[in-house]
Length: 167
Image (cartoon, rainbow, N blue to C red; front, side, top):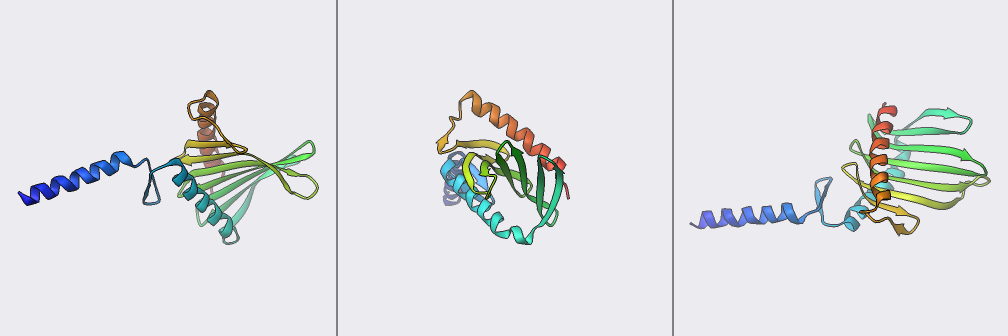
């Protein structure tokens, strides 16, 4: 009887974990968008700190810009797209972790000294699904038409970047 009770208790506890947890990243359950965003920001900063140990490959270049990819062994970790438009430079960074796009950002920098003038957008992804989109300091509503369009577009872009940037 005690074994059945203990088994039932463990089963209910595990079942409640499955339904109460929202995200699972790198072996850890995360309960909220804020918690997952913080974890992704940490992975992004770690990637930036490790760039010197990655292999950088210029994947494409023309008179208007270039695309670089960074690899940790065979694993794609970062794609940077840089383009010149009028008197500004636009740059987009696409961060990958364990083969999946987890974060993307775009910003505008000054042509003269490469100072960041504005961070246009930040995209946070869970299992390559957009769950948070920031435009400047404002979070875009998840149930908006624009969010849905962005989610579809970024999923397509993730697949395209992985196909174009193979090592």
